[in-house]
Image (cartoon, rainbow, N blue to C red; front, top):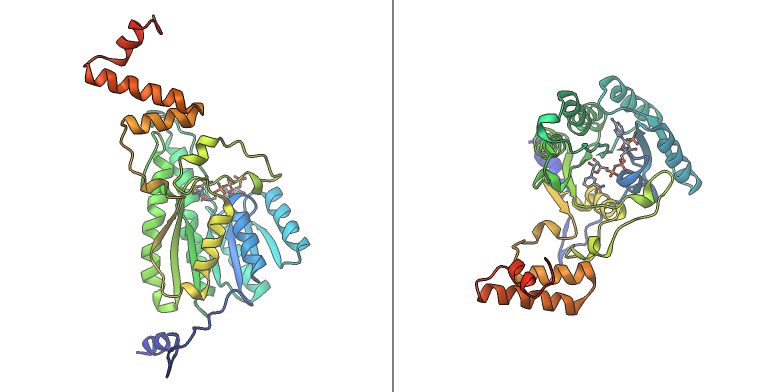
Length: 324
Ligand code: NDP
């Protein structure tokens, strides 16, 4: 009953004229932890939240990246602290949460972003140690961080955001540990959302697609993306860490107070693209790859001609002496 009363008090008030504009607070006097915040997507999230007024704690295993990002944020006039942390080690995580609370007096937002990829070895060559390391960092890490942050978050509610991946839903070959870790993270998200709802802790997952992190590396590097990389996305380009950071900033804010337990995909639309190989796709791909509209049209005509005459394209190319 008590929690129902406080829930009702949080609903935007209604004036005589209808709904009054809700007064949502953004990030004032709040503390946020970004795991893996030294570089890549986590660094852009740390920057965005710091610029919106958060006190930001960068919890990263990489000392050089963590120190670099702490310095960068402080030079901009933001409150930031680096705490060296391996999220897969429970002792490190407990120490992180204790240090943050004793320094800032609250833990309001936890961004479980630290993650590692996988080498791409074929299944039979994957060792159990490689499987365990990916699961330990990408899944056990967020579990441990959430578990030990909640002790402090419970005091005034909070938000946990897990950075998953579209790889939770679709795969390239030989990515079993990574895909499984991200699928598990999405399930962990809804489990935590239900367990922690009574404490006014919201839990969400964000699944990015292809994000080019070059500009947020330590030191920043030059992007090597091609025209084709960008154009295959319905949104017309590969993603940037800032795209993910903007979504995270919204989800962490009170404006998203009616959202919990769900996963949001942010991928420039690529996972919504139906892929059937037909003459259209081939023509467009040739044009995209070779930047030659005439050649793409000719190749399409060749395919259609072969289809009509029940010939293979190879036989036609042989007949007109293009190949031996
Ligand atoms: P980066 O490798 O650029 O940055 C990750 C940071 O996390 C690094 O500083 C890394 O340190 C640190 N880290 C690694 N292991 C640990 C650990 N055990 N404890 C604490 N920190 C650790 O990664 P991205 O920015 O590319 O990815 C960030 C997250 O987004 C990951 O969870 C990833 O799976 C996810 N993601 C990324 C996508 C992309 O296209 N980039 C797409 C979809 C999801 P170190 O340098 O030592 O490794």
